[in-house]
Length: 299
Image 1 (cartoon, rainbow, N blue to C red):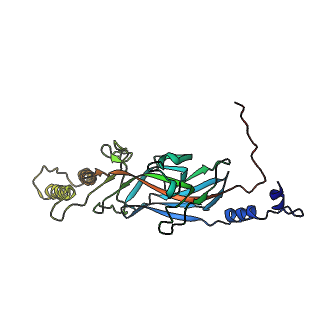
Image 2: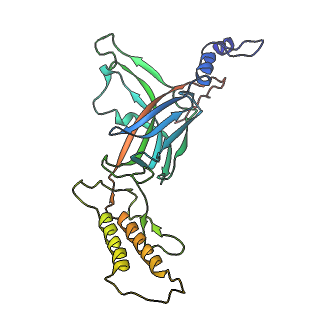
Image 3: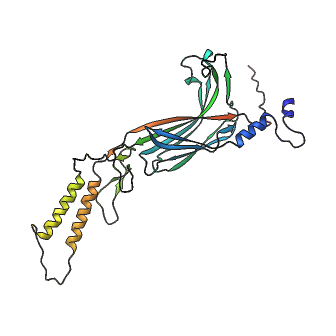
């Protein structure tokens, strides 16, 4: 109680000492950003408005993903706030690290394939332990192993699909798609449907010596138009007074339909994998005058 009174100035009531330092560190903390990569391809950008927190605060995160011209697509996302106790090297036991990790908060987002930016919030319990370090021994050779304590982390799990470098891009530069054509085009447009799985589709580039069906289709409908005008088919004669353009319209529709059908060929599913990253954060003690009451259990 005497130390608590010493940290509060009687005239202004302002915080001094350690509580003032915690207030400055947590309120003036700068934002930090991390790039999440998979095989050299950036799949997401994780940004925290601040890097230092107090007990009882909320960790806010912003994730930017699924750029239009990127080779990657994030399908689902999970974020977890973890605290891990780590014993110093001289007293640490092998295989006991996984039993000393605790998840305090979770956030899950499914079907984010069409999302460009999403957020998550993870609450830090007010009765948890802040970050700290302990060290045993004076060995300078392995100083990192001799340090233990409590470490807070944000673990981000992403379900990612990355297209191959040889995948073809459309006229807009997009390499992946999530819809497949479902039937011919009608008066109301072209119908599409979702594929059987959540994985997106890519179209591998054809070898230089191999002709794709689109070229074959183009030559086929070109031959059809030439034969219809120059001979080789059934002709309809009229006196020239009426203008009948139905044959030309039907030929154009048929040619366009063949081209669209050829564009839907050669697509395959992209392999889906999980990408995880852990970002450390600093959790300081609360700087309020609150002190937990003593709890006594009678046995």
